Length: 300
Image (cartoon, rainbow, N blue to C red):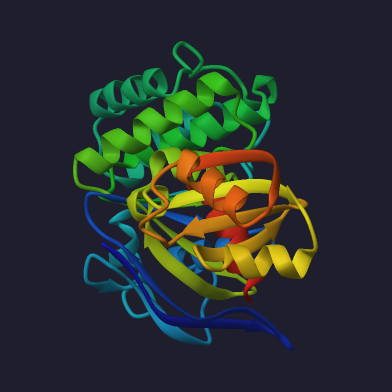
């Protein structure tokens, strides 16, 4: 388990994160969603001990990162947002160094490194210099290096960014495999569809604070309609508020249906017609994470 407990970090007069509290449980992928600059990477760096918070702590499987950093970090693998690798170095050299660090024998290092390179789609590239790797390939290697260490828990920071469709599919499969074996995973990303497809819960961070934490299943089960109607704005909103929460979204109205009498799109069309609203378009279904996210940060 990875627990953030009332974590605050400031840089001069700027507050990067403020009283942040959330957790990723064992057997769980927690999506940490936010716009650029919201505080996601600061949270990840605090969890790795690279950044020291002004107050609060991160606890990894019962170990305090602030008080027992080396012991706590044995239980977590970190995949940073930007791959910084020496152009003249090779995966083989790095695996050898890490194998020595973790007291692996040469045969163990060779076997483990070959397995993880296959898993991330980089088979037979262990002797190639990083100068020949694309940014996406470098990201895949960092994932392989984290898997090579075989920690219980993982921190992924914007790991989908820069990957091609094959890399994205590989990463999703790896995330689900790690979750199923018992890992606690924090997946930091601004790419909401990837969180929506992969995570069990989502924590939305905005301006350095956690806005909401919710199960993805609860978000997706809410009935939502996106409609475009003609008429005076105030009249439209007043009528729509009779059946649920109303938000203006991309020149349309987004309704989170709360009226039990509105069970499908047909019921909604009848309601609009009865109240004299001229419908131009309608999209009815479960709420998407993007809609939920935009609605929540708009309230802040």
